[in-house]
Amino acid sequence: MEATDKQNHTERSPNLTINHIPDEVLLEIFDSYRQVQDCFDQQWSEEYVWFNLAHVCRKWRAIMFTSVSRLDLGITVGPEKPGHIKTILSGHWPILVDYDYRCRDITGSALWRMRAVLMHHHDHVRKIAFSGSRDNFDKFYKVTNYAFPLLESLAISFEDGYEPIPDTFLRGLDLSDLHLRRLNFRLRGVISLASISRFLLSATALTDLYLVLDNAAFSPSSGTTLLTCLRGMPCLRRLRVIINFPYFLDSPSQPSTTKDIVSLPKLTYLFYRGSSVLLDALVAGLSAPCLRDVNIQFVGANLPPIVHLPRFINEIEDRYYDIYVTFQGCLFHLSFLIHSEYTSHCHLDLSFGPGVRLSQETIMTLAGALSTRLVTVEELRFIFRATDAIVWENFIPWRVFLQHFPNVKALRTQGGNNDRIARIFLPDHQGPRDVLAVLPSLEEIELDKNSLLTDESQREPVLAAFEPFVSARQQAGRPVKVFFGL
Image (cartoon, rainbow, N blue to C red; front, side, top):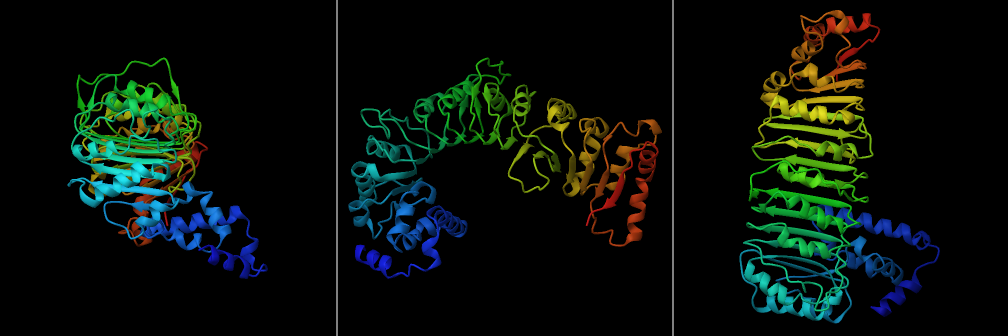
């Protein structure tokens, strides 16, 4: 390979444009190529497409090997025997260990390879992904009680119950510091957060934490336990917590206010799906002012009052200008956006369902609690899905709900009944002087282009339903334009 490198390096014309591209630009090109490959079929890592770039010349290989983490470089070792195993174990390539043994035991050559890589080449391992039974985890722990100085990513999944993590796991007998940056933890069985807290407390360099707990046991102190672990992760940027079918050791109760707030100044992404009680216990003592992307999904039949979430949301520094309110089946979804495009990655999503029993009081209480956020909204869009539109249109006390949006300039609808929407703004019993009580800053209403209203004459009755409102606003000096979208 050295001879090939020298030939490639010397025979290329120095006048070629590619020879004058700066290293940082080449790195961006390589990374874009990686993302395109992984987007379709994971060829970059699974079929080692990056080998092609690394063998072009020494310059390219040097650029790639100084950006191993970003370019996700490595040779995968797993249960199946790879043809390049001798090259891997005799060279200095980054190693990615991937063992998925959910339904079978690790034996024979698969066990030998796992031992050979993890025991004798642990200083080259960059990623580990392991899932299996309790018996398989016992074998796994025996070959991972060493220090892994290059290990950046760990994904482990306990499939049939939790096998306690020994203190020497990935740290060795001298309990060396962990250098993990990404941790993906999936646990099944009636366990508690306290049972994994010791390991989480040792992962102080994390930037990404993905925690999935199935059938886990929780107590009123569970939120405090997770907060304690997060306190030791000052570099955390992405947090994803999914709690499925929680088992409460005590009756769920509202958490008390936590005086000592844990600050995560670098956290920009938060995803949570689970009980509102556990979320409120978590955010009661959490502050993340730089959050840019928040997705919260409430599940479970009972939805007690949400006490601390409004304070947590109101501390987010971004100002939201647009909000999407979606009604679909039993789902109630609020999406706050920074930009006018719905595809923006900077947003706050709150979803209720499936199984959440919503009431008018719950929705109105939430709107009141988030009023400091709603008051900045300038564009409001209602989305009604399928046949549930009538149910939601009659469920929400719209005139009271809309009073939380005093600065909305544009209202857009999708689905729903336009006649009912018109009655929201000017019901029969309302006097002209009350026309500014709802959405006083409104300038335009864009109605959904119903596929049945293909002719202009069919749309005239719909627009006529808004005429009393349009006329009243004109007299009040705050005209509103009503039209169908394209």
